[in-house]
Amino acid sequence: MPRLTTHVLDTTSGKPAAGVRVVLRRADETAIIAEAMTNADGRLDRPLLDGTGFGPGTYEMSFHIGDYFRAKKQPATAEPPFLDVVPVRFGLAGGRDYHVPLLIQPYGYSTYRGS
Image (cartoon, rainbow, N blue to C red; front, side, top):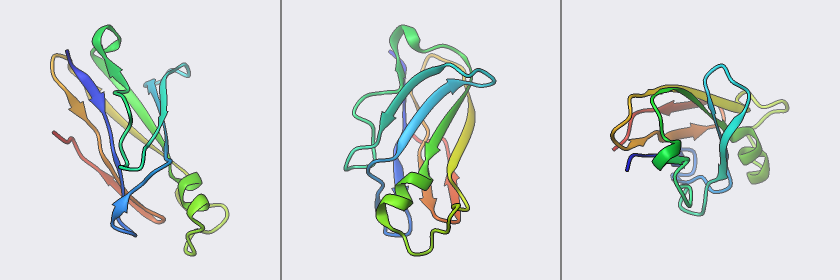
């Protein structure tokens, strides 16, 4: 059964980013499909999509990193923060697992298709 997962790493501290809100929607739609918070390991406690909810298409994960850095009282974080909500759009073809990790810092981020 295919699954969609993620994890968030704070490259400023070199540690997992706990407490990051992650919201999943189909691209160009407003309805939320799934929403979760990262745990102490920077991962979600369950996949955002799996089983019958998993289908081919274009999706968008929104990572609320501004709230994360505010909670950490990151000295380099301005108000408003340079990066607040980071949207990542990606396509799912189906039939296999997808892992979309995010590496964050107050002024930049990167993502890739993980395994």
